Image (tube, rainbow, N blue to C red; front, top):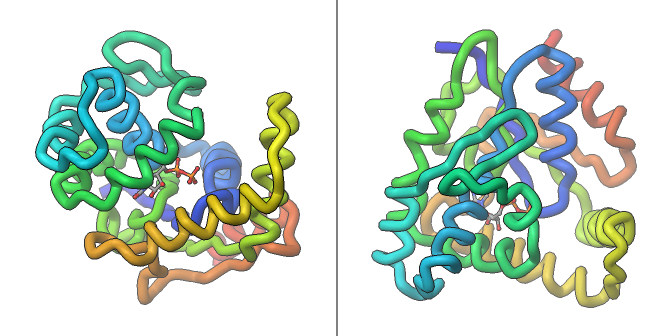
Length: 215
Ligand code: CDP
């Protein structure tokens, strides 16, 4: 099978940006697994399926009609790249990610991204569940205040003002849901390199991962 580098970690740890840059440096593809949970959430919202309806949401995940094309992502042929980033969608995604049926439905879809020359996969359970035989596993952490500040900066760049206290509370709630769920709780794989990016720039974080890979 093709080589895989997994980058897991909590919300707003910078995984997505870092994964894209590592993939670019290596000339590999990238899997944003969170996008699949967000797409499931958006499809459920569109179909009027409630976040509590486990069987209903699992069915939505099983029948998800999605296509990834470069930076674009299509749901039933419609470009929803911006829509899946909405807070409402992220919150719904965080709740339905706890359902075993949803996680199971998305498993093979994620593994299908593993093609030569290689894949950089970012998420919560890439190294523990989806690609347990990955060539390199990174668990990216950063303290919650650093993550809330990064998220606030991102929002400001999009012209959205956000209160740091609200972001902190939201982030702690998401962390709790990710680490306390029974199925695939957020935790580093036994063989993962834990990398703390609180005091690192994006470029330094990318370099640290490339150094692991080249060792
Ligand atoms: O913005 P944030 O980093 O919180 O979210 P994301 O990476 O886009 O993922 C959306 C949601 O899907 C998160 O709340 C995670 O709980 C969930 N997720 C997951 O359970 N497993 C993954 N491999 C990726 C995301």
